[in-house]
Length: 384
Image (cartoon, rainbow, N blue to C red):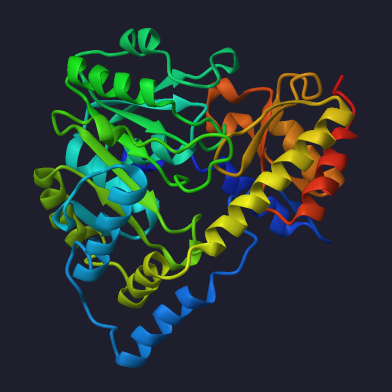
């Protein structure tokens, strides 16, 4: 029998998906605090944008980089809301934020290269790097530092094979928001070490106590590749539309890479994204306000139960400390919580070695389910 590719075989499966599979297999209802999917419906005007495209028969191939009107609208959005002064030719529409990240990595990273990825961090970063036959190197993020990168620690990880640094703010799973001063310093760090800086900004519109900051504002040497998504901001997860904003030469290469990867993004979904940008934004504010209210309610519930946590300033997750309960094996503890209490959470080790003793809970869940799930979590006795 022919052998599977080693890099594909070696890539670990997402721990979040493992929890999802077990949750689906259990009899009876499960409170799902493990998935980052908004509990809100996609706004009507966004769905109308897709319907109109279907009615017009806009179901054929479009340009690799995306429909011109969509790229122009995205360029306007990132100028107004992210401080990125770019032209539409620097925008590549992708099949969700993950594919924007994969295209950014495909354009900049080769087999044998090393890529610095956050730990804890979204597991798909390391998975994508491994698929490219490169090596993910975790850089630790610590609670004492507000889960922000330490430049001195980063410098100690750079080798002659290091090609790129991935940052993610607002952070999944930590909820940290990048300060402007540190964003500029990260750009200078990339200059000093001749690195690409790949910035995942999937949650850029979901912040509570701070303004979102895009490192690309301080890009002086065309090193920053910024990845965004419509999925979380507009509750469009299944429509799979994201975008990459990059220096012109990188964007041209990224557009070329679309052909063997996806050819182009679903045309009606792109028109839905256009409607999202051009239509009313009150739904975005409604969802952001709901996430903040859920965050505060969850924090109060955890405080009453005596469970420690990191208060998020962005995204819609809480990073909860269960180290005094899980006995040093948070994955087993989380799976037991699911089997015994029918509450699904994402074990911290899914996000890297630094996640041991923590779990991620999603604020995208209905408020009643969120608080009931926290009650059940808090009621689990420490493992002996």
